[in-house]
Length: 335
Ligand code: SAM
Ligand code: SF4
Image 1 (tube, rainbow, N blue to C red):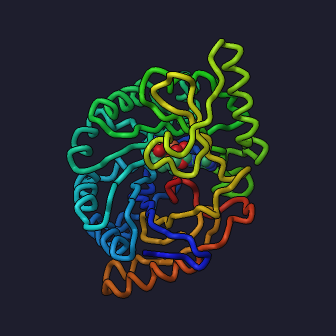
Image 2: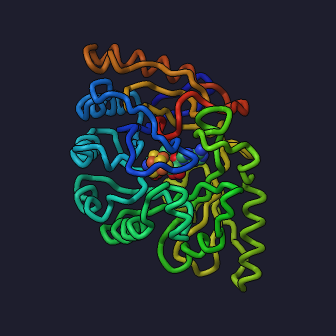
């Protein structure tokens, strides 16, 4: 079992498989895009799978593939298959914008992917195109349908809430009513350039603290004649609930989750390590401190890789100490 220097069990690995994306969300990537890293500096699928195997040997049991957009990485289903067969890996999940799910969901499910988080920040088609700079919301709706149809369980919808976007939060909450969709509201986080996170010129006042968000949704729900939000106890939470507070409308098939990395940080429960597509290990989302596993993965022994992994684990800070801004963009870290 991997225990960090603050006594936390670290068993959850988030791997960014690419820094490329088929969208350009305002808060994640600058409009002009980012200079993508040359392919040769990216880990190959074999190197990623090798890292996963070594991590499994160190006690990691859960892996999430992210990006950029993981579904634009060629051979992603093969990677899912390889990782899901590693002894000790209990589940492989993915965070995706969902655009390519209609054509890929079945193959991914068959390859061993068990769950997906689909990112969607608005239900309004025009606002969706504005936020993603060119996306078509119908593609994401089709992706959600495909995810439910092939039986990913649970299917979570991740919505980043940004004050100045004035998203219709109640409409989102209502997504949880008649389908088993777990809608999670995510606090906008200061990742990316410290002065205007992803180059979009937004500031910390755009983050709506979870307490305020819950109150806003409760008020809108009451005005619409929907029942109160019922807090869920641990046993009723969706599998793999993670660091969120969960609620449910009475009789709803899905749930609502509130993830507050800032206003009520969950560093004390942190169980994760991140790896970028180039093989850099990040002990903390909010810190630019990285440990480079690339060379060890390309030409070193398993023991060389293990040493870098252990070094990164021992460097996990006790908490993020409200750091603001990182050199890497979220699209390079994977969320
Ligand atoms: N492309 C995939 C997607 O959008 O799901 C995976 C990568 S994306 C970077 C992972 C998650 O990070 C998405 O849910 C996205 O909305 C979220 N994200 C990006 N920038 C963020 C920010 N500044 N604060 C909070 N969440 C952010
Ligand atoms: Fe791409 Fe995901 Fe970032 Fe949007 S949030 S630009 S879909 S990586």
